[in-house]
Length: 489
Image: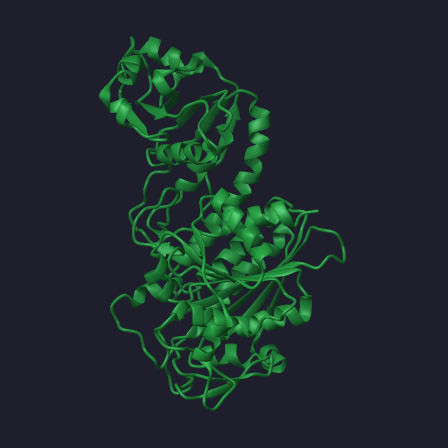
């Protein structure tokens, strides 16, 4: 898998700045204020930093932005990266500064002179997150990027704070890798194997095969995958870091490794993007990896339904009726509304088996949520204000866009079926809301629950602040923070 860069933290050594042969990053505060490292570089370059700090170009820079001076005279470095970052900068600005530096990384080593900045760990975190790249299938080998060192006050304390960030970054990278993988590689079996490999981190992992799913009555889930040669599976990951006997938080992810739409076939244009339709399962996997790496003191169970939605002589037809694990009958109106069928059975199983303290599901569920919220926010639906508030607070703190959507009984009538208990789609009006209403039918009244529709944020067509175009890993940071702040003992 793709791994974040290893970042070394050490005491500030001004003489080492003189000798540095790669890239040297220094911070410039408001009004052109320089710290000790900046003053040393300014002296070595005969006042170049202060001249830049007094320029119109510097005045136009936003906090966290970077400008570079190539091959500075008086130094051995190939470039000086000038970071506009005030001593009072907030966490977001510090992370964006690190991310901006990550874009400049090349084969040369990078030395970041963070001095006594209070968010030196966040600068490093932003740098790690934006260092991701998915080039597994590129035949032209790129040179390895150089090492990263951060000079700072109290490096042991900064390194300790950064250890938790490193666990999150690895979880984010794991999610991005899964979402970016092509479907001929990331089959249901390969996905399950990658999750099983996390047992070496201390997770307990179970794989439920089709015969077990048949016995459990997961006919909705099985109906989605029955047109594919790839076997449907449910993978259950346990992290038992909290008090013995405490009810776990359940995370449930949609894992459609490829979605053709089934018999309700999607248009050819853009269908290649449906390799990311397992994004919800990818986020659950990334969160579970993060919890294991940082030894979280919480009980969390992650469940993912892994299927492939293909057309064939065995595939489910529009008009078919299937029975859920819960016992409700469902009329299949559109086989491209498949994710809710997968999730409905897994949500019910999670409650029946684990009696969770709360339950959160994630899915690239509807195109309608993209129409409503674009690519800036995930749609948030919930039956409980308390748990919803916990998540929204965590998402805001981690700068992961999330917006609460309505969910009320008025929408239930749109998915009433003439011949069954419920139908799997209510058509175009309020499409993301009726999908959530469908899922809510498989959530018990006493279970605090959140549905996250991440169709617009799981994979994007342009670079974001912390990721190149493609998979973002959205949700790993927010869910990790939510668990840390509300579920750890």
